[in-house]
Length: 252
Ligand SMILES: NC(=O)c1ccc[n+]([C@@H]2O[C@H](COP(=O)([O-])OP(=O)(O)OC[C@H]3O[C@@H](n4cnc5c(N)ncnc54)[C@H](O)[C@@H]3O)[C@@H](O)[C@H]2O)c1
Image 1 (cartoon, rainbow, N blue to C red):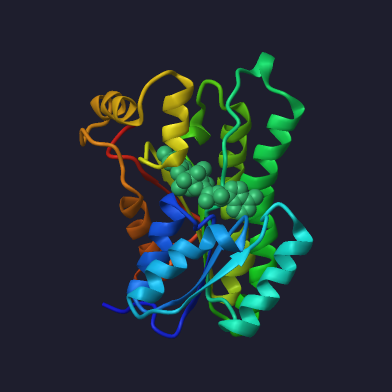
Image 2: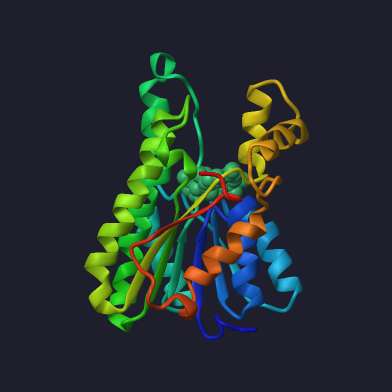
């Protein structure tokens, strides 16, 4: 299967976890992949895994919250790999705290990376997508968008992703650009391992407890999310736009 032959995909936060699995999936299906993370060094491991399989990927260091750096990133990607057809806004972080203890910096940082980062990258990418009358933007929301104790900042950012997605779908649809979001539930990555550590559990113990509450009785793997992102970024989903797809093992 090579749904992405001839396509250039930019995946942010792709050094590890869901972003790395998504970058690998695009490469397996024929795309040239821009693997973006905070530093080039962090992105290198994903690039090495992709190039070892014979596919093409380049590592880029960029803080998605930095508008100037994002502009430079897209210029470089277009020069080195070609104009982007696919953008996955995956870079994210958490700074969990109950409201009364949450600092302004906890709030600002989470909004800046998870939400403003997606705005910065979408704005830079749309220029190429509109010009070529083809584009796919998929952003990572979260089940936490519906509300989650200790995550006022993250929930607000991830709910914001859903509003951004619905709006960009309306604005960019006339230029043949599809814009969608994926809202995962619990996925076993460094992010959920850090949550486990905060509550005094090992990553495995935390996953077992989470799995008991999920109808499919297991936590998600990065590949479970990557395959859905790939579907939404493919022409299999060419009439899907403005949607947020919850991928959470059946939890309501
Ligand atoms: N793991 C989950 O259970 C889960 C659930 C719902 C949504 N998500 C979302 O999925 C996405 C990926 O999550 P993950 O679990 O793979 O996380 P992760 O922490 O394993 O990976 C996130 C990556 O983003 C990078 N990153 C952080 N800030 C950045 C910045 N400013 N610029 C560029 N890169 C930056 C990190 O260096 C890291 O490599 C995030 O947006 C997250 O909010 C995760």
